[in-house]
Amino acid sequence: MDTRSIGSLTVGVVGLGCNNFGMRIGRKETASVVGAALDAGITLFDTADIYGGTKSESYLGAALGTRRDEIVLATKFGVPYEGHEGGAGAAYIRTAVEDSLTRLGTDRIDLYQLHAPDQKTPIAETEGALAELVAEGKIREFGCSNFDAAMLADAQAAVVGSAPGFVSVQNQYNILHREPEDAVLPACERAGMAFLPYFPLASGLLSGKYRAGEAPPEGTRLAAMGAAASSQLTDVRLAQVAALEALAQGEGHTVLELSIAWLLSRPSIASVIAGATKPEQIAANVAAGGWKPSSETLAQVDVIAPR
Image (cartoon, rainbow, N blue to C red; front, top):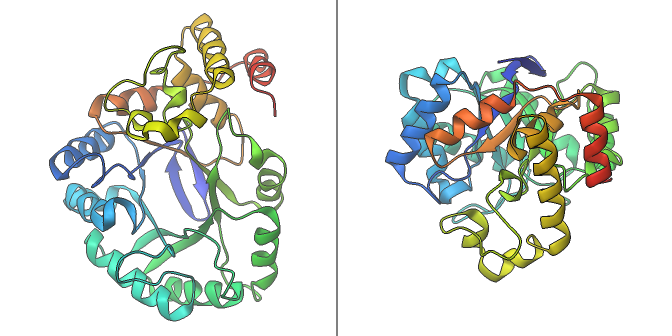
């Protein structure tokens, strides 16, 4: 697998998003998915303290076991959950990191990410606390999530001297949701920050599972959303997906492969952290990382799903 950088970290271009662990799949199924990912050469595993009601971290740590040192382990903090007020204050960061280290069964987190902006805490306080954790060896690098370009600029301006700052930003980005192209991606390119897209398959819409006039297949993410899925399964979006699928098939690929390869055509994107609930999904995700679509194919994507 090709690799790219997140600060000092080297990661494969296809990673594993672990938000399904403890929510849609249990401990045994998690172990199967993690094992398949390790065997397929995936090195970036991305979770969060709130995923699966904290079970994602616990299940992931147990599944990694003695192979933990083979991978880049990323998790997030800051969103409130039971017994935790959340936020990005220095005291809370100390509590959150120790809890995550315990659940993950490790002595360090490779990429520790602020899950959401905290308007109540000065960004300098947050970055200062995270820099202290780097100095102590509890984390290696730190990043942010759901930040806009102005927030990224404020965070950069708050870094003092040679102190570490955010090396990555994780925002929603896929063929059907291209908002980061307006400002955040250019900001990442200027600053040399890595971008990690979440929902790379638009909650599964770009997986090829959904068809116009048909109910979402049982067991899928959008089926679980019930009536709320109607905003995703519009006639316009389904027509776009059908056109993207036809484009991919004309190149001998699937729409899933097109969606991941399209993201990786952006140089700022370090890794596409696609989720999985079954081992066989891992192979499909990894295969997508090896395709480099032509400029003509990428131009056709812009026609079908313009910015």
